[in-house]
Image 1 (cartoon, rainbow over the protein chains, first blue to last red):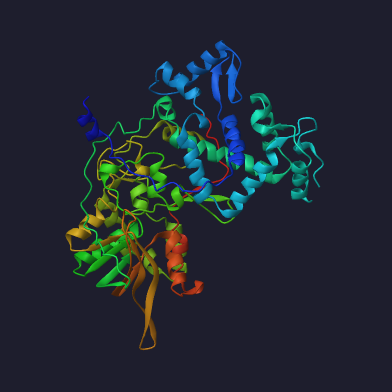
Image 2: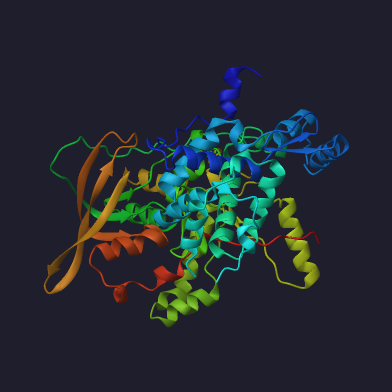
Length: 140
Length: 381
């Protein structure tokens, strides 16, 4: 299909409102927040070599079974490579995620919610692995 | 309990390992503890961040759509050209631009557009205004990223003050009628009775039913052409087996089959007979004028023989590209405020009206999609 024909089928491009000029968080807070994001939406890969911090590695047979299960659950199954690309995608693998997260934190979130996230990020930057998790503490 | 002091002590007590340097397994365990924490703020933060990340990823991830079999562009439906509205433009100046008309209608959605057509065809000079902008059919449907930002209030959703409910409300030329799923429900009996009970007897009259039928007929609102998707079929069959009453919602597809599945980010085939396809073009053909990007801040009132009468509006116009602004005052014999459930009360309150004097039907016409913060899972029947 030629490029001109494609233009007849696809909507014309729109422009999103300008991204905010300032960052909602400090560089350290961003580091922690994106680390949380890539843990919640990890790269999923077959267990080959040493896994990176944000990778969920599965034994090869389990990984292949997961790919097939995902393909079966879609009415017009995509090809194998589309599924493996999807599984290996994470929020830090492309820039747009960070830009739009900043837009949400800067513009859409209320002040109290934004302050709450900053506070939690500052407190959670370091985790004391030698003592019991905070959730086990006797909170009054 | 001095929660903030405890957390503050955690920070001040020193560190061992930054979160980002933990293994995936340890990070997962830490987040699992957040999700089950006795501390409400930590649990809520976990769930809020989880929702936030998933929403942004679903809208921006380059590999999400292809994996789900969800193409950017609809497979069904033929792209069409949108109606060529001639919006008024203003040159920048320090003094307000003053316009004069018979009727100013604030809003361009489902209520406003019907009023615009009827009044314009009735021979009145009509000016329909909206703070949102027009995006013709050639630009629709918008992407999962741009749609929420350009077509909805609050960039996608508006939370209630306590955060328990998120409201999705259209904010664009055509209002909610541009972003709805073609749903065209006639006002149910118990709602009409409630309104009539508060003194608005018109809503239980035969005349109101005639109005509803005329509106539905103009849009071709019907269930005849619906082809249900799998999820709908499950709901209908499940309801049948449980002995529940379930009905399909009529769709304003103008008598056509239409199941592209992209309605909420605008109809690219101009087949959904919403305000921008049916009512507002009818109004245009009858001589109505239009302003997009005009935020009405106040309805203006004057004392006429001891009665406070609405005489126009005052607000700010901003060009679609955002480069120009002008204060605009409209003098009119009649003012219709049909700016949606969220904004009509705000405009009227900002205009000096007291809460007790607001028409009660404003409270009842909440046609928006309310998303409870907790969702229910639909099991297979």
